[in-house]
Structure formats: structure tokens, C-alpha cells
Image 1 (cartoon, rainbow, N blue to C red):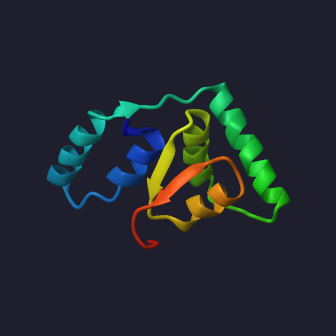
Image 2: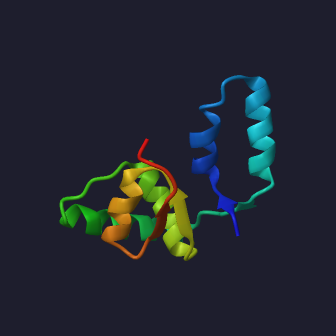
Length: 102
């Protein structure tokens, strides 16, 4: 399953070059399975952030939220962001780096 969430949509769509590209990307993203957030997802994120901080690791909140969704739904994140590798090495997050860091 390929899925997305609101935060991923914001992260990707903000980089569109123009309205045409925005509409094309938005249409393709709307065809993906959409992951809902709930209180348990937020609790997962809070615990994840707390555990990482205890290890001296601080990552952006948006990345924590996305990692929380993937952890909660037991999915693998395919990414090009070194923060997900840091999270995965210190939690149950499953990740796969698909390109060099951005």
C-alpha cells in the first residue's frame, strides 16, 4: 500500500513550481490511501519524541508526526531525509532511504 497524510501533502505541494504542476501532483496524491490521525497517533508521536530526546536526538516536529503515523500503522517510510534514519535507528520505525539526503 502507498499512503499519504496531510503533512506529507503540505510538504510536497508547497514545492510545486506553478498551478499546473500543483494540480497534477494534488490529483495524484488524492488517489493515494489517506492515513488519518487520531489521539493514539499523537500519543505515539509524543512518546517517540520523548524517547528520542532522552537519547539526545532532536528532530523536526513534522518528521516526528509523519514517523508517528508510519509507526502507528506499522508502515515503512520511503524517504530522502536523514532524520528518518535517525528515528529508525532509535525506535521501531521502519524506513528505506531512496536517494541521497536532501
